[in-house]
Length: 159
Image 1 (spheres, rainbow, N blue to C red):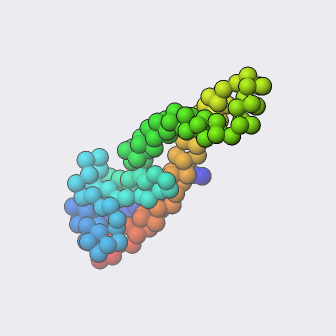
Image 2: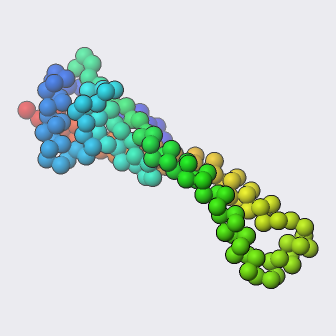
Image 3: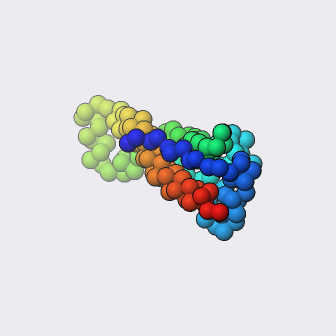
């Protein structure tokens, strides 16, 4: 998916553009509006699934240029939880399966322990899950950003 964001042409100054968007935010139509954004003129939430992003607008020479940035905190927590939950699952799974006599007999015949099969099936899919989650987040945040850009164009064109 091409994720190029449309640049918005405006005759308004940076202050006027920010004020109009602030008014729109106060009406509840611009979630996550941040008038004191350190990276640009203002920022708006771009909702993604499972991770949200921030749509940052910069004002230069009669143009508002949007850029989309993934919010880093939630993905970091997700990654940490993914790593942290693998090991506690091993003793739980082993304890559960040990309650079945056939499992102990089978593992003794084969000569493997639970961790031999448990760790590969829990660790190997993790990078693919991570990549899929990031891709889905970027795609859904892009759709949200497009909606916000259309709303911004309408708002800035209004007299």
